[in-house]
Image (cartoon, rainbow, N blue to C red; front, side, top):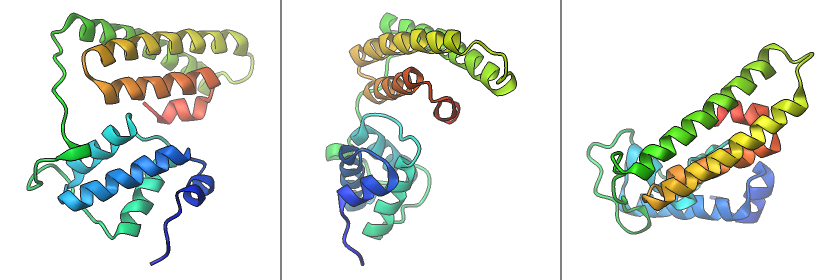
Length: 180
C-alpha cells in the first residue's frame, strides 16, 4: 500500500489541503465505527462542514480505497455514529428562522437557475455583466440563508450554502450547474 500524503493528494486533485485532511479523518473515523453508506456520507459531510463538491468526491473515494474501507449502502445495520461522526440535533422546520432561511434560499436558487438557463441556451448575445450582478446578489442571499441556518443548528446546510455562494461569486457556471 502506498503512503497517503495530504499535500500531494490536494495538489493532484486541486482540492484544499485542509479539506483533504478532514475527508481522510472522517473516513478513518467511519471505518473504525463500521459506518455504512448513509451514516458514512453524513460523517464526511459533517467533518468537512458541507456537501462535497467536484474532486472532493474523488478524494473521498481514494481515502476509502487507501484505508481498505468498503461500506455497504444505506443506513440499515449500521451502528450509531459517535465522536466526530455523531449525528447532531434535527432541524426544526417550524422554527421561524428555518422557514425564513428556506424562503431566502429558494429566491436565490431561482435567480441562479434563471441565470444558468440563459447561460446554457443563449450564450451569444446575453448580458454577462447583468448575469454576474445577479449571481453576486444571489450569493449574498445564500449567505443570509446560511447565517439563519447556522442559528438553528443546520451547520452542514449552512456550509453548503456558503460554498454555493462562493461558486456563484466566482461565476463558475459549470460548477454551479452540478453543485446543487
